[in-house]
Length: 192
Image 1: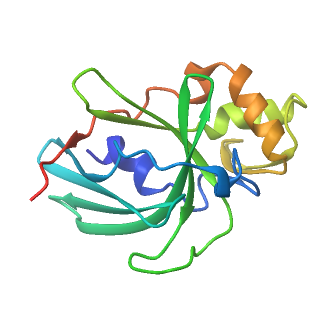
Image 2: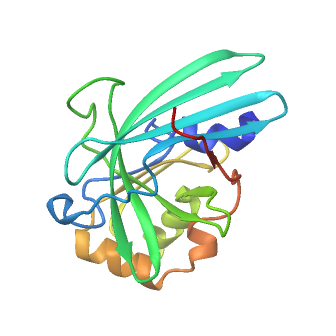
Image 3: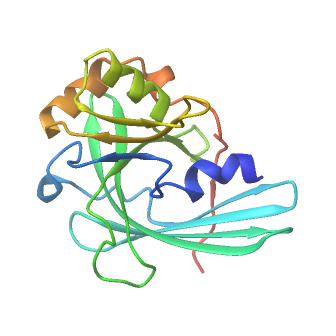
């Protein structure tokens, strides 16, 4: 399960993409009511829960609880708002202490999400490697930090406008930018 949850567990640590700006203006965001509630994923005896709750008219809070049979429980908090670009919907995610009022970071990271025919939720985390390649090719402005020994991408910081980021996502290769690695559907739990 660790490989499935790695992307979600580390959304806002130093090993993910960071953007100075979101994909759209937060004050114009609408709440996706389909997200509201608790979602669960079970795999190899481990369980992950993601709880989405409306914070205000534009933002949702996220509490993630992971029960790993070998490593115990991990709890992380985020806040997010949605952006719709074409037919795709994205999360603009910022780290936030669980129960806290203010984000603990001003850096955004992005995920694409959708619901299948049965209503299950799939979240795909943006690929640092794909964005790093776009920065290297001059398609985006940003900074790429690599491991000196292996040249593996360790950190990407985007320095782009909201409009440029949205235009990039609208035309980029979605399968490359949001690969199906670490993807498994979350099932919504019934409300108590």
